[in-house]
Length: 377
Image (tube, rainbow, N blue to C red; front, side, top):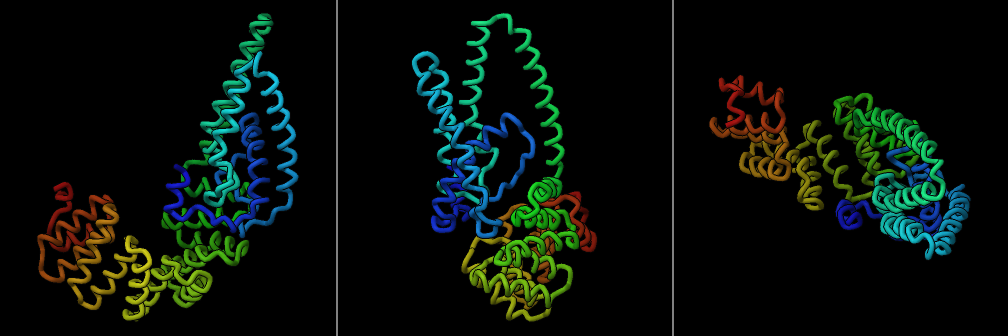
């Protein structure tokens, strides 16, 4: 299921991107690291970048980690086989852990990570089974240990609660989460990129520049990073530098849809509508369901007074993203320009349904003399 869903988002890495030696070593190391994180859950990180990723610092240490992990893994596997007759729960639980991790252990690489804590939730049931039944067996043979076990259980629960409380603090927002990821691995270019993206989503455009630049310092061939930085620079009005960044992205990946769309925005802001239109149309040839590109194309067509084309583009954008307040607002402006007042009011109110308090839609309704209270109609 993970493979199917993420392959649709192009998150599955090509088989030649990460060498098989690195995949196998990472798989062995990950088996051990999941167990270690369960026993000692500190230093947890949302993004554990795969050492074989093209933007990672390299494979140094990976094979050593794999060998270190293999020793206890092989020892536990041997013990599980030896105890099959007298302690079958050990064999079942350990086999569950090893077997259910196979699809997500990195032999088929999904995304950038070497391992992800969420992948271990189901496999760790096997480990908990082994621990639970082992404790029960121990107490059956030595009942005098019950008070000690109860005390250890209470201490463990309190300690884990404290760790969980601290961990939840990092999840207050996307920005704090990726700040934590950067703090855990300062050379993780993906973490820096997502920190920049979180700041863009929060409206902190100036603060997004530095993490994007840092991501590109770490991995100078990161097309997505150039595209994202180009978009921010364009929004900040630095059009020349934005164009340079976006052209870098397209030099690396000529059909980079987001970079094409962002470059179209640069041309539109310069008033070169023909060049902007070409970029948006090319982006939509490559990715027909890109709502932002439809919205951008609609804005260009509206400025060219192609009302019918603009209406189609904005309607398509809202079909693809029913919460796209900007597109609904732009659609309302197109209707308003044609004197279609009732339709423009409905579009502005749809923008408010998508994003309550959306200032441009409120202003447009105020100007038309219609109250925003009809947003629920």
